[in-house]
Length: 69
Image 1: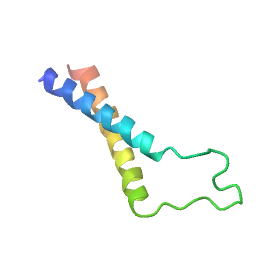
Image 2: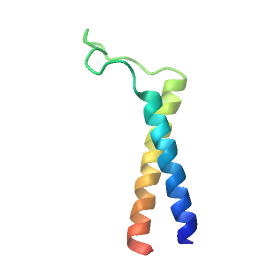
Image 3: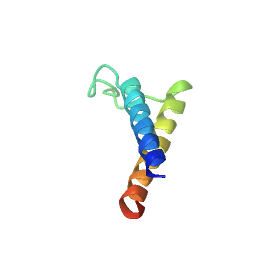
Image 4: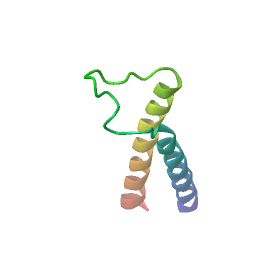
């Protein structure tokens, strides 16, 4: 059982890294400098929400492994 959890956590972490690298853009302070923040459209929303879901799954899996295995 712990092998499956190890493999699942590795896969989730690799996908998280890939998604984070996809969301990084040119500059941090240059976006939304005019007072209106950039809006997410289409695939950006999907990537953003999948990032949140995978981060929650990763944290939950880490907590499960810490306390139960």
